Image (tube, rainbow, N blue to C red; front, side, top):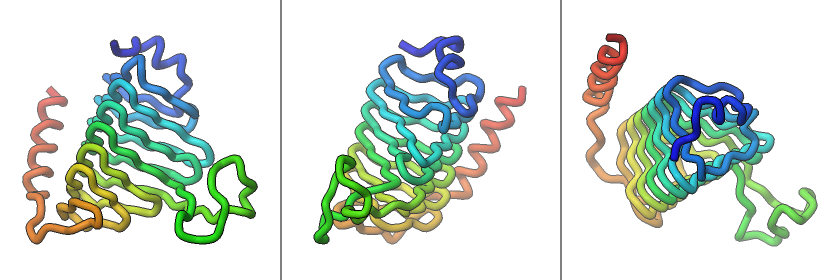
Length: 191
């Protein structure tokens, strides 16, 4: 069931567009650092959390069931027309699992080795089910990530990637068509 406009307003979001749909089962922590654009939708079981970071969700963004966006230590941006499929996780910070440091939030910072960096998903980016986007990654306009992918590096405009380790396909998405379709939608919304 979607939250009513009154319930959305009472959550204290940094900013909230029009026609925003948030399922009443979504968990929102740090709403005062979360911006949500027009016509965006957040489904059941989603976790959105901020700490030192800010979460910016553009227009026409869909965050599917059980996805998690953790802007705990650096900013995360989900630009206009982004889509996160079910179970996707986006992190702006992670412990170093390879070195000799301690891990987890119960340990003092000077005993840990954290990678902290902003994450930016450009317009028309889509991330497939149960994929993980790691700190410092930028996915350019129209990039597409297949299901079950660990995204540990940037993707260029229209690139399509999948797998673990990440592999990039030779062909790209038709970004010119995405721009045309977005213009068509804008014209319809203006009527």
